[in-house]
Length: 185
Image (cartoon, rainbow, N blue to C red):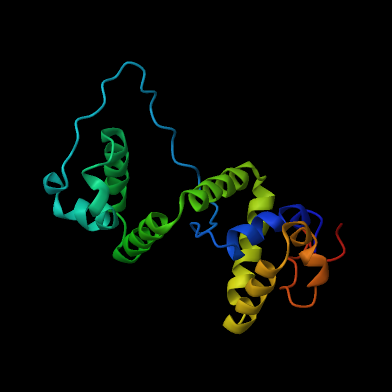
C-alpha cells in the first residue's frame, strides 16, 4: 500500500465499509457556504402543499417532516431542489435515494457521516484521487469478496482496524501506480 494511502485507509474503510451510508466519494467541489444570516429575518415557512410538482418529486423523502422543518432548512432544501431539477433523471433518482438514506440514519450515523465528509474535504487533491481510485477498485471486487471484507472489517476492534491493510494485503485491490510511472518513488 502506498505511503499516502496508508494514513487515509481508516477513513476510506470507515466511509465505505462502516454502517454509515455516505454520498459517493467523487472529487467534487464543496457547495458554496450559505450567506451569513446576520439580522435577516427567517424566510416564511413553506407548506408541502405549496411546493410545485418538481420540488415535491425531488423532496418526496422529506414529505412527512417537511411542514415541521424550520423555515431556514426548508429554504436550503428548496435551493438544492432547484439545482436538482435541472439534473438528468438518473442523477435525480440518485439524489432522491441519498435523501432517503440520510432520513433513515440515526443522529450518530449522521454525525459520523458529517465528520467523514469534513475529513475528506481536508485531504489533499492527490489523497482524494487515491481514495477515489481505491473506492472504484473496491467496487470492482466480486460481491462475495466485498461482503467478506466488510464482515471482517466490522468484526475488528477499532484499534486493529488501523492495521487492517497490513493483515489483508492479499485480498485488497492493488495500489495505484506511483505518480511518474513504475520505478518512480
